[in-house]
Amino acid sequence: MDQANGGLRRELTSRQIGMISLGGTIGTGLFLGSSLAISMAGPAVVLVYLVGALAAVAVAYAVAEMVVVHPEAGGFGAVGARYAGPLVGYVQRWCYWATQVITVGGEVVAAGLYVRYWWPQVPLWASVCLFSLAILGVNFAAVRLFGEVEYWFSMVKVTALVVFLVLGALCVVFGLPGQDAAGLAAWTAHGGFMPHGLTGVLLAITVATFSYGGVESVAMTAAESRSPAGDIPRAARRVVLRLALFYVLATGIIVAIVPWTEAAAVDGIARSPFVRLFSSIGVPAAAGLMNLVILTAALSAANTTLYLASRTVHSLALDRYAPRALAAVTGRGSPVNAVLASTAGLLAAAVAAALSPDAAFPVLLGIAMFSGMVAWMLIFVSHLAFRRARRHLPPAPVRLPGAPVTSVLSLLYVVLVVTATAFTEAFGPAWQVGVPFVLLVLLSYPLVRLRRSARDRRAEADQAEPV
Image: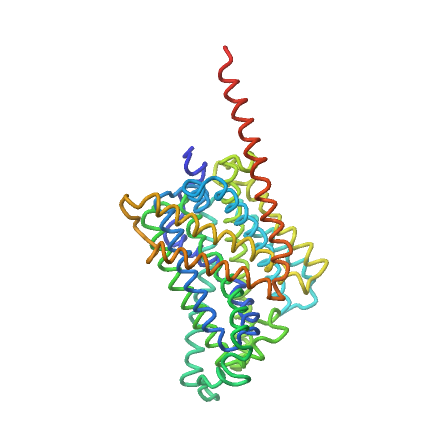
């Protein structure tokens, strides 16, 4: 067994790693979350997603710089424990695990909502259960099969987004048959570019920033990459460019063609702005097709986040910060027990969908945000410690430009985002549940350390006994 990998196999190719990084990021954050961001910022949502892209760039480059030097199980969490101390690595990984677990549930709930586009009579809980079983099957398989499934899942939504951008740009600049060019007049109509002022923009930044959550997933694939030294830097550069292109241009086109007041309508979750755009163009079949693409995107994001959650808790088990059974892997290199433990979010999604289907998605999304942003904060804390410890060593193949200044500024930005969630109605549960969870993780650390020390003393005593 490769001790650094914890039994995981290096079977992911460069193309698969690139798509996995997109798979965890392009999901409901873009297709559903954009509706919430538009309702807060109006046409200024374009600037909001641009600011969020800058933060995503910093995260992607920071984690890539660290894991390309240490391509081991646990990704940036393991590096954080190495350079910033075991407490940072412990809190970081448990918070990241919680984020991914809840996000899995949120994405599956979103997928169920998209099914209602065609069959509104289907109970949400039924769709959630069916999709949960499907992504479990993929994650139980060998990582090579997971990577291939996720590659094609992501390829579908990336291709659809490119078509959307091209068609939308034509509609804005030249017009389509039977329609004049939309132009950018809608950016200043219905209350102006910032209809809710600077306050609305600042609150929308919380949504946009969380939409980029998953960009750090490139680091979690390092232990299973065939060539981490080349794959990780390449994937980081590509995913940042694609995300900035997709999010900024896509939202700009939406608010140019569909009035922001309509794109931010209450039913925006059931019918996202992307689907509404195709309906407004006058191609009904295209709206249904786009809804299928968005459904695929949600399942892709759920598939990837379950992968990330399982690898995170597997890493914790390797470091004896989680039950040792979660470190076990099958002959195919799949951490089955860790995957099963990470289905907690799927169970939460099924229960939430059955008890309160209309509130399930925003509640799950809000809870995931807080612990996710804590993980981002600790990424920058770890990066600062990493740079300080290696200041006299050769530089990594990929580096965060401007660090450590950019690390500090990015850390302050994330703190601002977390603070802003307290003033965002949709993310109220983020503080109500997120703060107690982080405190619980912090309080559990001394107990876990004591248990580890007692186990080590027993092991040493057993070895010292004469045979």
